[in-house]
Image 1 (cartoon, rainbow, N blue to C red):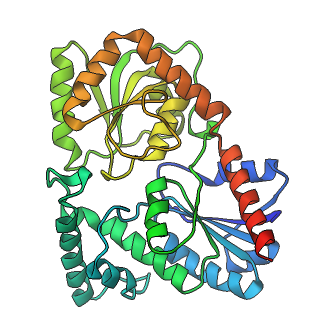
Image 2: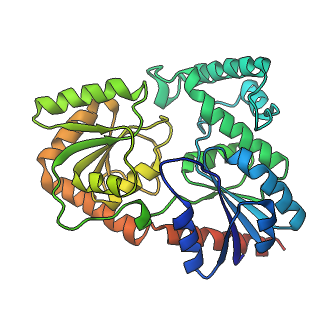
Length: 356
């Protein structure tokens, strides 16, 4: 597994992965070829696909050709899947086994209608779960993780994937529920995504960096009002902040607020980038935040308690510094991209040897 053909399946996203991945793989002694055409597969013995955005549409021909050439196919899944604690049901089985539409076109009208019915069914099933007891998660919001789940399971059933890495543990549990083995491989730190800048004054009290969705907007308004009453300011950056500009912003920030996109998982990249710049993370509660630890690398609170937690951290510089220092040391020394990815590839190679 020393010749890697790397397919970065993300296009036009704000966080770049190709250069860090290629650098780490090459520094570990592996030959790396960036996949642009199926003919590039002849240069490797392993195809590594970063499962982001339109990975299914982009990777399908590569996976098919790799099978014919005997190239091992590994998908590093970095997109959301259905919640692992969603109760088993005929509805879920039907949805996940339905044949997905062609990747280049939308599903037919009837399939779209049936999909919407499934999303609302999932919503009803989730009402008794800890993360949706307030009935705040709508059927429409199930659409993306549900479609990703169906695509991934379909690729696995069709024999197009040999191994799966998952970037968050709830996704690993979901796949396990459906009899699919996977390896937990969180995206580790690389300086490309952020670093500590010497001499930078932290003149921003609290920053939120991300999309202001319908769910997040009222919470941010509430947080902003509470912080203002306590004498602090909330800065919201929801667009056009990438690369060096993002690193400077996080170096200026005392606290970064993390509001989960999906209530059953916490996004890894936002936490990683903040910690690499020593901005302390105050996060909405999530049940599983591995590889991070609450109280050690970040602080979490329920939605109603988040504002109070942030005010306390802003008033207690010693607490804030201790959390951000431990988090920075963890990501830059232990939780690195090189450590995580190389170890995963070696574990996969060992598993192949044991099966022979």
